[in-house]
Image (cartoon, rainbow over all chains, first blue to last red; front, top):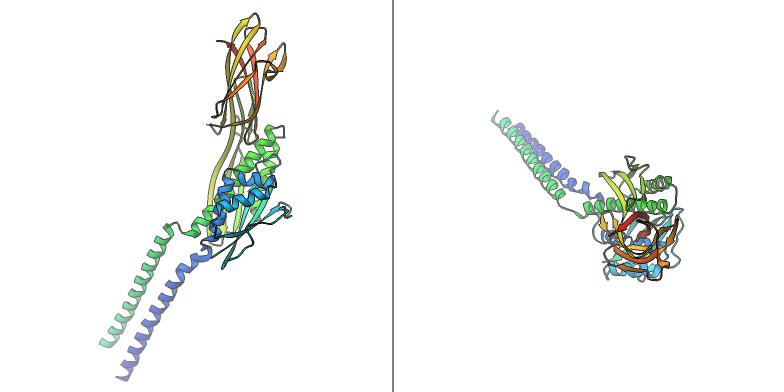
Length: 137
Length: 250
């Protein structure tokens, strides 16, 4: 009688272990795809740079050193609630922007950084790495 | 005996519940992957920006080569671009490979045809493959990049008196087969074996239709039954192109 009770207890315990293990495994599964889970502000920044680059505007502004024009273009394509700071680095790793390209510093609860590889459509084919830091809610 | 069977039923039921839970989870997971989640969008944006850079690199090289640079500059620029992208590990290893098209009429990815057929072509053609792997991201994308600036020249003349001819030339500029604007252009005509600038003629006029088509008129003393005209121009990207045509009376 007692032995049957012990066996029942073990059965129930084993069943519970199986279900709990399954639940734990199942809860882990969606997390595996979270490594890329980046929402909002950085995606927005990447799309803003893509928009400017798609017609060659970004390359022209960077190549001509038109920092005012670049800042203005970013103010237009980025939402007003986003703060930004753009740094341009050439192929040799030297920062090329001679002044800060920003709308007043990066502020906000969330701060993200986007890197963009840029090729300019000019005869010497210069390459730049753009680092866009973004801040927002 | 009955107790043992009940225990087995319990275990089997537990397994069944587990399989049900896992199946449901896998089903939900697979369905959620079909949605364009922000993570997927971010990866697409990343691949798209590499493609844009590749297009710009090919265009920049065409600008260089069409303006007198050596053909090998296309390959050199693409080598630089490939190694530049290889240093970016945002989604794992980014492996971009460029293959210069060498099928006729291309040679090392370049085709410059500035002959006397009334059509001038400056073109670059490269096949790219982009592979991104690691950190869970898997991209395997092949895309061709063909940048072509084409110019079409046609025209006619009417005899004013003697060798004095009123020449009309129409030029169309095309980028990748679509009408495109020209940045600047020079029209010349062949006079006694020498090219003369048509804009120096007193009655020279140029009309921009605003849709990539331009009309030029001038009159000059040109002996012969045909007038050889040559148009040289740059598109807005800076690609140089030239076309030559023998204009007849019409």
